[in-house]
Image (cartoon, rainbow, N blue to C red):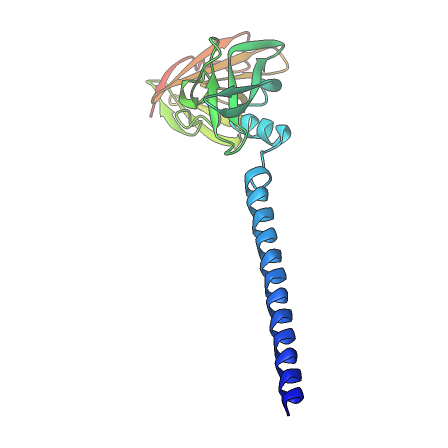
Length: 219
């Protein structure tokens, strides 16, 4: 009987010890996983955007028919990393550049003094799809009317109509910011300048129309 009791006690002890060992090993595995996650958070969870994506963010804000974007450098300001891009008009870089936060993708002005300031300070910050210049509507002066209809983002259709007779001129003008130009095969040229609600029209060369439509037109 005593032998049986001793055997039972030994068996229970062995089982209990095995259970403790298993529990400690399991707890050790849990601790290891949490350390790996912490390391991942410190070194791998924050992913920077790539240079091409940053470049596209800059190009989206510009009139790419006039300007191009080139990578300039990488800078760190107040422990924040930025990609810096030059903006070129033709082959000439503008004095200011654009800095892109490598984490958030936010755009900033990169000044000549190599400082960062809000993007609103950038020379061309309001040029993309300039909302102040809408090339549509009907305008008048004392002798004629001018109707503008958008063709695409870079051009509009125009129609001049004389108020005194049947003379008209129609065509498609190419937009450049708040001015636009039309030129026919005979080198007759019309220039449009839009400021606020006034369109100023200038003609040069010989027109097929007997009427001059030069002058200022208002809505």
